Image (cartoon, rainbow, N blue to C red; front, top):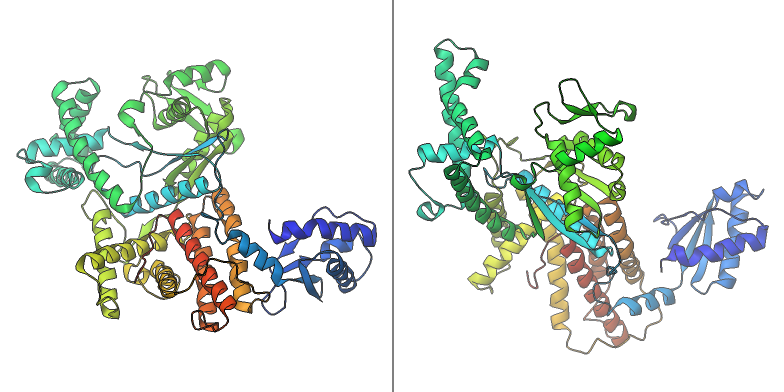
Length: 592
């Protein structure tokens, strides 16, 4: 139970007893560093009910708490703030309760709870994953893990964009220029091979446009009449009509991409419980349009197209079915959401991890699903995130200048190797141990750098800066974890028993106070869909630990009780670092 929960009933009783009034809410805040105290009650709201000065009110409540609440050791009043000092016994009791609790702060879901489906990644099958996908995957995976830790059942899913003109472009280019090459014959990952042909199509298309413009066509005419784009459009029609050889090529090349993606996902450390494919979902939702028409939610225009008018909601009219009866993306998304709940009937909400350029789309989608009367529609969330830029500038996949996810992960490992070698601390490691450690540090640096930032903010990603072993970085936190493991290995005594101490050093108390926040941080991070809250809590915990490490002796302490407690405290800090990093998908090294 948190301090505020412990103190609230006693403060409410104090106000009732002392002033014969009832307060709606007791307001707390963290005590400012310049004053003594562990938690502060704000007195000002009470002045509306009791005619007195705030210092006098604070002193009366403080004295009542000293006499009636065992956890309160002393207090001081500054203006309208009652700073309350909590006894060491409270923190020692709390620590002894949690020190052997595995996954402290994590809540197990109940069998009857509604599940949350988290969608992320959702790539196109015409190119490899890139830097933007990296942020998407890291965010989606982490949010799923955090929601799970908060006590909910979670399904991780993605919808793969495996159909459309962009897919046909890669297929056609391979037919024209591929000479039958395969991932096996080239040694390339399948997604990279297919991506090369997407770039090759664009190159050939531009050359044909130039040729037509040189022959007197306007740019717009040239774009529409270039032979290669006409062939791609015909291929799409052939696919939609089920032409066997086109379907066969589509299946073959998509499988190359899926095999390549699987390697990237494994290296990135993310996973999925289910997969949806746009080739299966693109016709979904058309039946729902009919239901919406019958209910008067949708309206049909004279040309036969179907719309929803959301102008009263501050939005605009949105088409849900074209005049020729074909669906639009919105229709597919409506149908896919409904299908997911049919597939997993315990789903009570969904999180869509999609870039902020789709903010408007999801506002409309969620509103339509609410109007259609689905009870789970009120528990839909768009995990909207900003772009990731590199110092070299924006990425463009069509031109082949995209920052490839696999290359980025390798670069991070190489950067970690260079910095680690410069520091010269790994002489005793085998080549295999070094390679594993470089990967752990490099990926930890990448993930932490991206996840410590609020999802809505745009990121300028700097690989060198992210692998710094000092400051708010993944490697700094990993190094602290490894340092604690070294202390535990060197502790040549049994430190499992309760330490018989009655007083805490100021730094010990601050560390226990930081640990106490963890369960609440998990709940807040789940509620706000924000891994940044977990990342920055962990950084604060590590800073607090390093301050403790500098201030007191641990293994050099001569008092066995103090030494025992400090090793136990160090171990618990390491456990929480590992658990919080697991929510971010980051591994921690035993040695560094």
